[in-house]
Length: 583
Ligand code: TXA
Ligand code: MG
Image (cartoon, rainbow, N blue to C red):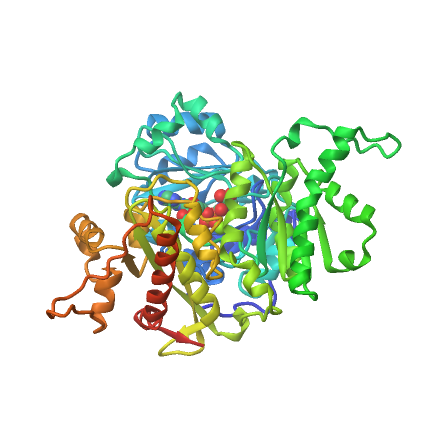
């Protein structure tokens, strides 16, 4: 997956330039990679039936080869040759939502090379509704495999200029079709069984899908462990800018009150109060941050009401530290979604230390927006501690010739407490100790990912509050963690799996014998490094970490300290086992 410069310059072709588009399409058919617009985000396309061309996508993106790509079409008749079966459920979804911002996972046909689907026997099919996208896909005259056209780990591109800044010199051309309409990637829905399972929320909502399929979405949690859905890409912390991101929740009744934008009209008391409620947490947070770090630069991804209130305050010191990216009026989820990635990228380029971004509640598009924002925020969870010093940026990709990735999974039963805590602590260590490079080639960066999951977890639950509090004392912030359930594909994609207790390791190895040698309990991992604790009779003491749930807060504090101490000891061994060392 080495990233090497391929072209002197990447061509940017306007959608009005038909000859240029045709040239880009011909090159794509012949094995080159081309960026193109869709209604969701820009894609990085290659001929889906040509394995070598597909490899070039992974290389240009710096993307782990274990994350499958989706295949784009311009006509429904193309689906037949790409899948081995269109289930009745898939047919309903195709009829209702294609073309549009949806990706439907179906069993794959033999025609699709394995690197497109990362070895899975299913494939995601997407038919964009965007005019330029369909025109371009038609010109290509082949199914087009395409992930979002960002560098792996960066926010998805919603403008040609975003693609250019991530991909110039690495791909043949970019078709410029203007801003993406939605700004968030498609809804990914697994239609391989008889219940639709949403793997990634998007503009097509759970409710719409349930209606069309005549199911009750709550049934999805009844899926048995071994038939649990596979959502390979979701383990990667996408969408994250290098600045730290903190979410500022909007008042929950925001949609009930109209704030007039007519300047002449006097605001009602209710509207004034609402404006104040929206802006207050931004102002308070900025003041708090500036109190500990007087030189901080703060980016605000917010509604215009927030800027208006900041300006009304006439606090020039405060104003000199903030950079606004206004998406529209504060409660407008469509506008907030449309500009989210652009906002994160733009504020990031302005090198702010911290981004405060609007948080929405709600089950529709809000869900897709929060899914992306939570990921951006969680990568850089610990804001307060590192804000005390001015942030030093870690090495950028240009300091290395190439990049590869490695990942660690922490596992417990419900992912609400212990494994979530371990992930938080480990992330902090990664941030403090990184960047990392390959042991045998110091010019290759190793991006180390970590995640956590629960063997019996329910997806999307909130983290245990006491654990959040106990970790705060250690400068570890896991407040934004949401639970996820472990499944075969999650195990598959991690190089090392650490469980909290021996019996959890046993359970996984029993179900997935091929994982032996990659799964350890924390205590057996330490033992394998020669660190054993014996009691006075010389018997081995198991260091299993008990779950503090239901115990007093003191137990949480104790658990947090113990986990943190252990992980510190284990950290260098883990890095070495991943083939990496500190750069
Ligand atoms: O809106 C979109 O979907 C954009 C535009 C360009 O079409 N594409 C996009 O691709 O977001 P990408 O690769 O960034 O995200 C695709 C997601 C990943 O999370 C991937 O793991 C998942 O879909 N996916 C792809 N094929 C899959 C499969 N066979 N089974 C399960 N998940 C799959
Ligand atoms: Mg992506």
